[in-house]
Picture 1 (tube, helix red, strand yellow):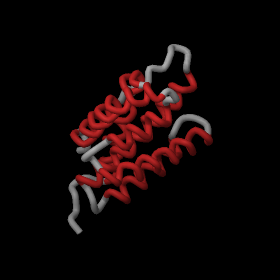
Picture 2 (tube, rainbow, N blue to C red):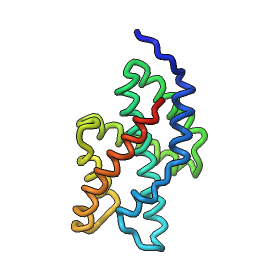
Picture 3 (tube, rainbow, N blue to C red):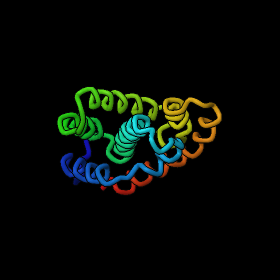
Picture 4 (spheres, helix red, strand yellow):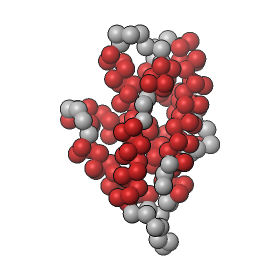
Length: 153
């Protein structure tokens, strides 16, 4: 087993700072919600944060394959205790993280269109709006992954 020079605490601290500072407004704008659709915006922010966390898991798999499981589990445990919101919101977020981790396993970082389609279907009702959002979401997800991967360490 190859030992890295980074501890799980360091990796988690770096990612937590990135997650806390990331502004999802550009991604939320893709959905085209109206000004007063607060519940939909809140759901979109929760889903995008869950996706962001799952993308970090994907980046860990590429850079730290042997340590990935331990680091990610430790992060999720810490996150579940420190996450803001009700227990129901935290539980929904944790389930969403699992869903996105599973979805990302198929194509990994090669193609994000399936994840984008899932997210568009989840957030939008109109088929035309879904179709318009899918490509933009796939590109936004790729950009999020690049940012996470580039700042992993």
